[in-house]
Image (cartoon, rainbow, N blue to C red; front, side, top):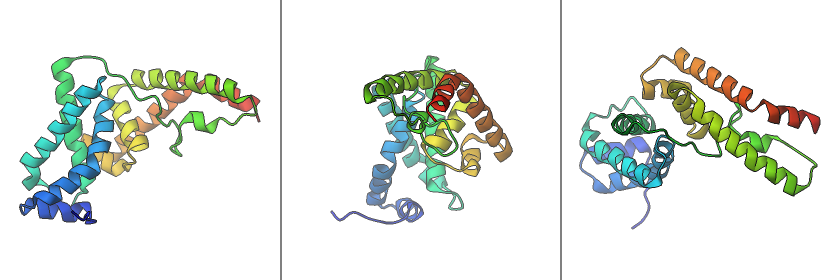
Length: 199
């Protein structure tokens, strides 16, 4: 079957009109991003896969309620967030973060921002330690800051879109992002000192 190249909104319109192929195309586009997002709120890949499936089941059930003034991506992430929150409330367990999250406004992981003339082996050790420390630092963020950070830096949503996803004002979202970045920079300050010694 030839791949379709419709926009998300066009596909949603077709899906609402009963086109199963349109849903399949949306599923293919967003299965990976949704899985990646819910994985950061669930420590097990198997559990994240279940949450991903639940997200798309809810999408099927509520597809008729999509308002075409919004982006489909924003709507899908809103559903995924609600699914993850519901699961968290049921299980009440601590979740594990990805090891490769960006910590700066330009969206690159801090490990990529450290330039060094040190031997590659030494830089590799530092990079691995940085990833673990970054993972731990993200895990300690308050939940509301963590989800804003992930949606902004990992999934590329705008502050306005994140505000729609989490149901808060845009100014509040920007504040949460600022606090998250400040906390991560404090936690990773030893690496910033190291980077300055290399310049």
